[in-house]
Image (cartoon, rainbow, N blue to C red; front, side):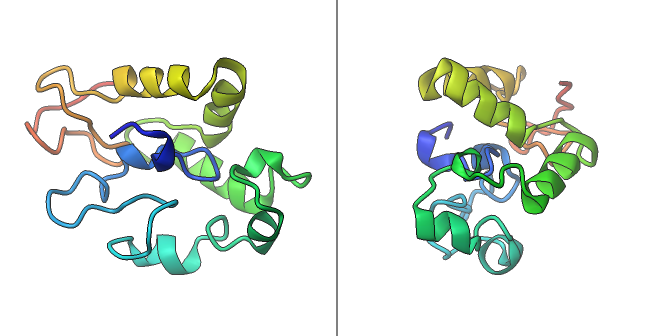
Length: 137
């Protein structure tokens, strides 16, 4: 968990997705193979499927002159307002550019580790998937 390869092109940390935290066949994140990814991520996500990003070899969306595009803004709005815990792809990419990947991953590890059991918790759920206790942001 909390590795550079788990940072999606949009800036989301796939490590904190509920699908990456499941015990059997966890999602490998947006940069991993399609096996074990949720159907939305592998077949419908405009960011994963972005032709411009793939053709130009952009690792992250903020390398694109069209950043932030409609797909990135949809993800930003959803992850900052519709889940129990707030995650901002735009802020994540800014932090990576400003402080570097190692500092960003250290922040993520500290921010998304359950204070009760010491394992990662999900942006999607109020309770830790491992110990079941409520995790406050």
